[in-house]
Image (cartoon, rainbow over the protein chains, first blue to last red):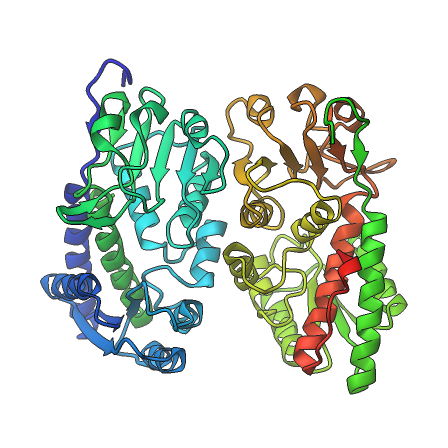
Length: 298
Length: 298
């Protein structure tokens, strides 16, 4: 690829997510044929945030589309950590449940970490436990943090060169920035992690062959921060009046980029696809069925 | 500090480690007074490597010096993962043991990860489990990986400026480079992690305000890689005919550095001090005794 002369490649997530989901569908069929059991994702929603409600419903619908079951547990805004942990443990011990997703953010009084840890490693299909962070970090088989895992699948599908390249991750949250850094490191990138205390952020980003924006500020990354030809991956998710807005000022960055994810339709669909795939994988493991990712499914 | 004009500060570990160990001694006394129980570290040595033998003996001796107990478990070179895991679990369940250290590297047939995970979070005083990596990464109370934890204590004692500075960690091992990066990030540094696949390593290191060498290659880091006034922390540990050699070419780097750790006598003593301190902390928690770090103990 001549990075400077060619038009930027738009890294669309939907077609890649569809490949993954089609493969999930086949594996679900294999599991049902072998065991008579449908893989089942339990979602736990705490409080009444309409956006969270919508995401949980979307996951349930997707389960249905793929031939899977889903269970939806709802707690009021006033739930305690103890109640949430107890229910999560119950789901973790229920053999009919193969994956658990705790929708977050949770209300302020909840100790999110205690709730996440109650999932345990076997059903942590959203990749939020310490154990999953460990397997991601150590390059071992396990469940990826869903969004960073989705970004890695985009990278693989579109053959983004990673080895020996300099990746700059903007943001150090435990569900985005940090696991993203670990996965990029495992793919042999040199990785820099930036955050709100970083001095002269634009100058650091200008060195990046690969930029991952995971900072939670709409249109934060500007075009003149981008080294010509760089790959821009936008994990931003900022609900606005006209829908979600990314962390990257797309119009400003597009002309300088070599490859760039759109928002919506870039990273978003990948997150959901990885969650589903990891639920199927969890079910296959728990039920002792051998199923395989098709090569076509990236 | 005028970084360019002043002579480099030599970051000696011994006096800082001694402060930590003196504080351990007091806390051990408190624990014994309150409960009649001596904090106890169990070390597990697999195989007959003379260096490993020596390290384990040094730890046992230090326990004795501090008024603690130690148990030494030895396995032959031919041990299986199953045997090692079973024994580690037994120690994890033994109320008389408060901390467990599995001396590594272990023989090639051993699944080190399985062995480490058998320690469990409560007694992981060497900070090698996924759980401890999680607490380090998330900035929560827990046990640090001993060497990176020791380096952070050196940094704190010598008031090395970290916030907003660019730290470059050379090496991405799970006991050094990766946890080091997480701890520096938690201290608000911008962190770059380099490794064997990094392109143009000297140029990356030249940007660092803080360099941590954790690569396992003697005298690897050269003077002309160092930005004048940078802080150099050498976690290298390369046994040679004349004793241990660091990863940093000390004589070459010294003139350009603002602060630098010697080898030996820099990071080494800190590792051991943190291991002991974490064992005391583990014992205090398990026995329900409140003990506190003295401010003087960094």
